[in-house]
Amino acid sequence: MTIWGKLQTRIRSRGSDRLFDTVNYLFAALLLVIILYPLYFIIISSFSDPSAVSTGKVWLRPVGFTMEGYQALLEHEKLWIGYRNTLIYTMLGTAFGLLVNVAAAYALSRKDLVLRGPLMVLFVIPMFFSGGLIPIFMTVKQFGLYNNFWVMIVPFAVSSYNVIVARTFFESNIPPDLWDAAQIDGCGNLRFFFTIVLPLSKAILSVLALWIAVGHWNSYFNALIYLRDDQLMPLQIILRNILVTNQMQSAMGTGEHVQIALRKAALIRYSSIIVSTLPIMCFYPFVQKYFNQGVMIGAVKG
Image (cartoon, rainbow, N blue to C red):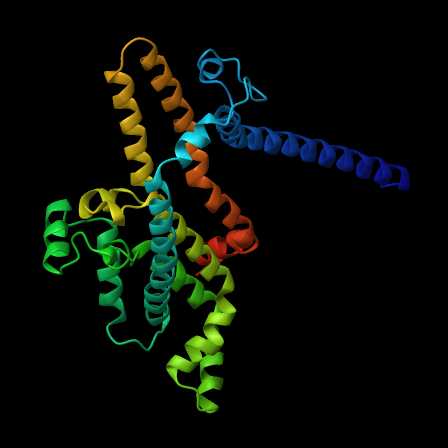
């Protein structure tokens, strides 16, 4: 092939590559808009007049700007109790969840673990079968955890999925030679785990921490079933009770009071979504750089 022919081939290949990249960028931009716009709509709706939202006038910016929803929401004293409880449940639950899941995953990743296969089966079975709500409720009650602070942290800390993902990460990224070298230097199992394994596992630890933290932050079902004391309720239950109360007030009112109650309920509905999701949205950027790496390595390799 002549030099001119090679040049033409290279130009055509570059043109096709640019076309392919352009299509990819456009598709990615479209997906980004589809994903982000609902969140943006909730934000601008929380600052807009409810009548403008219901009539479809709110698209790209707030209409009839108002802070009434946030003001009405922040007036509830129990909101701060819910925030306090959820923060405590999330921090303690994430720390305890990381401890038990990562420790179990590392133990199962060791080929010298006695009965490794049967133990792995015991972790896999709960992914497909559950004892049901009533047996779990009876177990929680017999352990004295019903209407107890620790019921939101201890009983449901172990996740089979998290254990399997972390185990795969350890098998793929912690070479057996490290353990052999550590033994020569007199390093035991616990010291090896804390001083060598954990520092090399920042990616998967960040992913698991995010998953566990989001699960605790959004948790409401366990609180609904196992808690009765208002002082122990998490944020999600408090927000649910506030919304239900406002809806009942609008249903029981008459005349002008109904319109006021409906307006207040609509404003609180959008504001509560922002209030409940803002902390997690602020937390996510700090672990984002580890997220894709940890998920892909922990779920695909091995």
